[in-house]
Length: 184
Image (cartoon, rainbow, N blue to C red; front, side, top):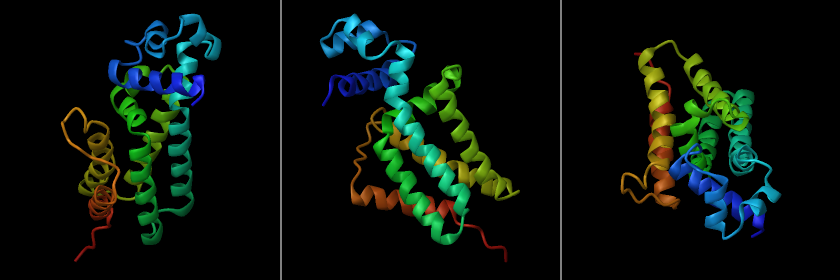
């Protein structure tokens, strides 16, 4: 792993646990066993380090959102979207944790505003598919609940590994919540 990748990993862990505003370049340097100037050699600012650490997650959720906008919520694509969304949550757990818990207070940071905008677009997409408040709540609980549960599992003393059983259960539950309600 390169020095930059290691700094990004350390920074992400600190940003997610101590908060972006509660984390200093000096603290990241200490954890990496480097001087502050060495960190600043790789990243010109704490914001640049944040961009490098969470940018790939934002790129991925933007990509998922673009695919969703292209395909819509057909039954075939809904399943594919859910699988990709769950995989995204497992892969970018710390980043999602930051978006959920710090997104509103960090909106003046470009990478966080990109994440906030994409999350708003995702919510608006699902909200626009129905006028029924019950469906809107089900959609919010499915997407937001899964994200919150996975990214706070450590705080709740839950063991949620990215294994086939957990993944399958989450996709199944989200499929049930996102399935259109047939009117009788």
